[in-house]
Length: 279
Image (cartoon, rainbow, N blue to C red; front, top):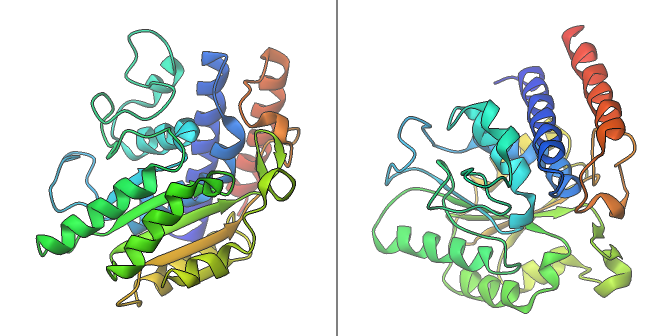
């Protein structure tokens, strides 16, 4: 896909996030929206995957370590063809395969059940080690929240990945600066994030704007040139990106829009769609 096509697809993914969370009257839109571009880039450009064969043993793997942002993962999976987009309206409802956190047993395309913060990266490290032991060439990607990396288990996993030279692993940190209780620097500062990963033998790539496809493209291409080390991509993003009243607001970490707010959000995304169609 070219940049414009990726931008259009990202806007569709954002629409799916808003539709699903509004229909559920619950969920986590803020961090789903901040990571929309990286979700879109991974599933439409970067990863070796096939929606028609979601359990291909040679596929690339993705672990959503910050599992509460399942609305973002579900929306990109639906838009990629793993299941109907209409299913997004069943988010968190009884009988739906779209639970509040990703479940490998129920949702096509989900490679790992996640949601207990800090644990997803450990699963991703295990997958990457497994690939090495089996002489498999697939790559493993995992997305963490910047608040999530306050968990000690994250650094145990990072230590192991660096010690075992897992150059088939890409750890992505969504550094939107906000967690459920507010500014991450005030709650329990994880900074400097890049230096911490470097200390554990990671090749670190800082992305100034993780909502920009050109910068993401450059970062993931650089990651593919690295050998002998795992890669950490630290990307600065905007929490709630794309919805005017949600941007940079910690209160939208885990709250659904009401009917009036939903209309405003959809209008915001329609403006983006119209602008992209003029390009």
